[in-house]
Amino acid sequence: MTKCGKLITSTYENLAGRSNICEVERSSNGSLIIEFSGHTEICWESQLTVKSDDGQIKFLNQNGEIFLEEDVFIVPKVYAQEEESED
Image (cartoon, rainbow, N blue to C red; front, side, top):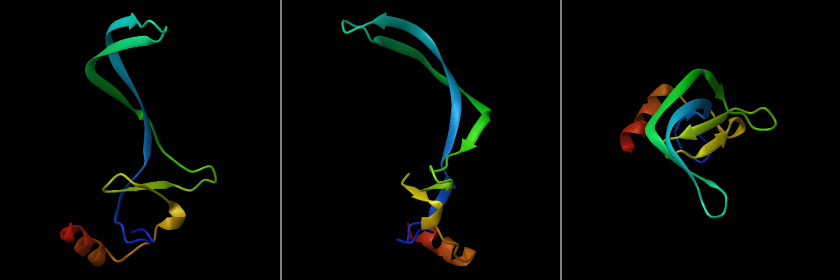
């Protein structure tokens, strides 16, 4: 749980992936216009928990907001389950 009462649901992770290209064009300004196949292959071996510059783990709440480790505290599991059921 965060100090402001938001329930933490996960860690923030960084992954590599590969998306196949169907078509490529060059725009008038020189940048590429890429059309992808619609599927991305995730390289799970590359998964890393994201940390801040000072080494704190980054966490996410159910709305995708990021919180640093110093902003998170542990609550009894019963309390956390009650918070989830209110949403």
